[in-house]
Image (cartoon, rainbow, N blue to C red; front, side, top):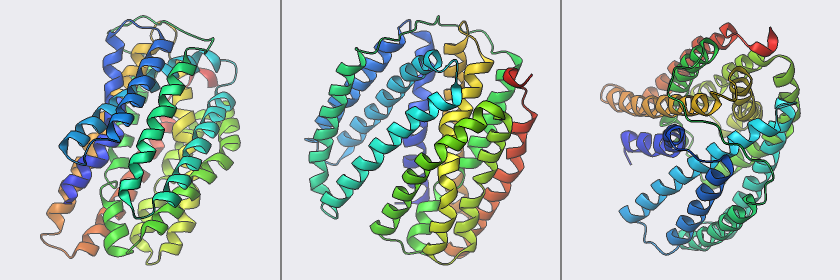
Length: 345
């Protein structure tokens, strides 16, 4: 797989759920229905994927899965705005803990059972589909529901600046994403076990950091966004400067903090600096901006690497790209301190 193909796969997986949420702004629907229908479609598509050969048909099905994730997440975020009004940080982080624990357990079980036998993963596709379908049914039991109006007018000044900073940050953040798997294979010669250790470590640390991030989010939100964004410089820097996977394990301890901030603090800022009249529109714009930034950054990163290896050795190109990504993350991160926050005024 070429660097451009890796960039496309990486960007699509992360960007499509975000971009798809923008179009939901133009649909009149209650939040609980979006959560229900998105989760149900997700479940049905996972069940179908258990019987589909690994071909272009599977890719189309997976594309549908990513869109359904976006639909369900949009409904869930609208509900979370309602239930977290009195305590943004602690409520949002509590949801993050349960979501992370579920994902961590599922990843461990799937990895242990399937190992190198990729055909066994089809049984987990089927099981995932059944669980998502059950979750869709249970989502109808949620007592909280909202029905914000769809609007197309421009966001307020607070949100506009936040959108610009978020776009720039996600653009430079995703520049390194196509390079990480290349570094894992060609520089560190990592196997499935090494990657699994990093993923499990990230999940555990995200759970451990959530309480700290919850308190920081409620007390010093702009500072928390800055700290969360600047900490992201550690990862490409560690991949470029280290020569052993053990150093990556050490650097990866910061992932718990960055994950918690990304999942809690940015959304909390958006919730409190918008209002019930414009929240659906602002949330849609935010997800579009983030998705487009991720898509563009990943593609640019892949293209730049492919250009550099025409003149430099692959390892030198990888290290140069990663150091450049670290510098850009370092430059953009302080912009979060320039934001204004209604909660801090």
